[in-house]
Image (cartoon, rainbow, N blue to C red; front, side):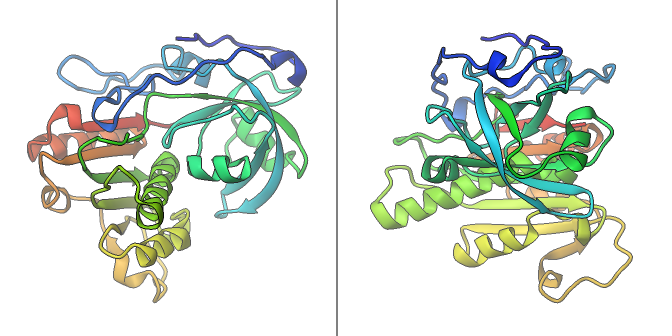
Length: 316
């Protein structure tokens, strides 16, 4: 496994490597449960640590050896505080699995960013592009994206992470429950899009892997902070009964639009919501702020979800 190295004052060409390394083969049933974002004691309690930068937090995570140049080819405002970037990746050998993140190297910025990919591996395969959705903060990479990044800006990317869904032909079908808080939706949206690709491929060409159902629970303060909501509604319409979603809002002050109303619950995700999905064939993927992950983990323990079926990643 590659270990993180902190680059200070680099230029993009200096970062590029010609070496390559293939991903280890993991089916959905053997994905590593604890990422470097998660600090757990033996009994599963999440412990607080001092705030570390991305490279420190993920030093023990899997990393691809390839670092590829990429060019910004699209910028949109996903919300008032989140920008969505589309990046054209130069290296055709660059790949990732749904749920993984990238190290984000910016010329002239000494701090390396870490952002979960929010697009599907299929988009990269079809068009040579991937997407990131980044919330505005004072963290130098995020600040650069919101204040200095423009079309044709050049950066460099390296894939990493042990949190992903990558079923293989011959794997037994599973049902997924994806639980997201805030911008923790990013890796789960990538997984959701990948599942849609699998369903589409299955229907069109006879994919050997048979997908089960997918339920997304997505919590935010209000509907304006629900990222990708139109895309998610589109997926539900495209795959009725196979992909479903429940949005949860905790501080909604304005009226909810008619399109969203049937799919929105005011209040937090509850044990009652989750227990209806309890099954030996269910895998649970959680991403959000640490307090939310700890709360959801306790709920899953209460309903008897096996630990080896629960996967989570924290963001800050």
